[in-house]
Length: 497
Image 1 (cartoon, rainbow, N blue to C red):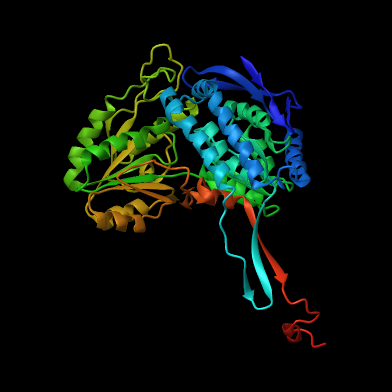
Image 2: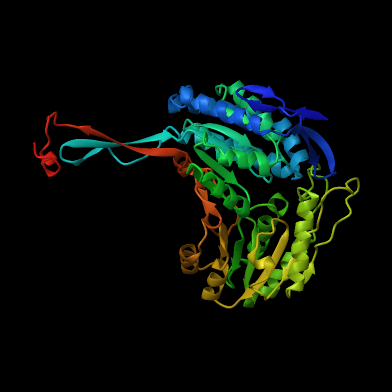
């Protein structure tokens, strides 16, 4: 079992307190590696490394083209070493190898290549004479040393979504991956060093979020925190970050509605419902979790959905035929089971699933069968709260206004989808749904060129797209006097010499 070190200032280091944490394979419940548990001193050293590298200008003052070329090398090296990344990510996360090999890794490489190119073409307001005597221009400059805290559901991808826009714009970063899934982030550090990222620009520390993450949020040497994870933790980090008013970018929870109108292609909606609800083993903030089905097609939709779920292949994530692997931990499985029980107690009817399957050779794995629950209780926890697991909550609706009102009646606002063959209904829904993304006759698709951003308690700030690059910059106004006069005409308004 390999023991990974932390990456600070371009060097691999152990915890100053000689503490390590076990990393488990959620498919077997057995350890696959161990990582360092950073002390406060370790966190401080990583922050200092980022701070010093930024202040030196070695990366922050490099041209966009130079930074772009380095990041393109990173993408090439990940692609070259993809077999190792696929194996480790599958063992560490429990996701199916076909998702990681067919989607996660190729998509992540595409994300990097897009960001590398986009950082060279930022647009802005034209330089102009907005007052008669001078020219104004806008500069976008890197913010500084940034703390990046990533979740366990997309270990490698989320580092790219959060850290790479920052790097592309010239910032230095300290990354703290989730304790459940730190391995590919640590592997990435070697890739960045090989590609030519200067020492201290990219640092990785590991350990509990309750200590390491909070220490980063409180640090007055960090200029910004970018966090992806739960809304509760995001609120906590925002409070801590207020100590020096550092900028905070948050991508938080979701409770995506999946609205099916009676004129929709029901077969297509059912197929997407399966994918939208079970991508990443149901552990995705964009998962379709609330299925609002118009009364006229409700029975047909539910019947087809049940049949399709029964064909799902749950098993060993390393098996290419597996559709769905385990949840990330026993704690997460118990959380999901708790929501299923609560949904039933609050008036829901379990239509199928929710039990623990028998997976030969994986008795200690954290598996659960997807649960299908029908409820008429709009205030039920399974309707209002993020479950982060394979639970399909099915509800009926009467008309357009009923569907939109109930879909918006949650504290979250990340992803949503509407299913209809009527263009007017589709256009109205894209306007009326209060979510950062609205898909029409599809769910979960996010191109590298488009932003992933939230409304309400799903956070603020953007991942992907040029907007994510702007997220990690300051805006500076620069003014040039064009007159050469000692006294300008307007000076008399203040001081008449």
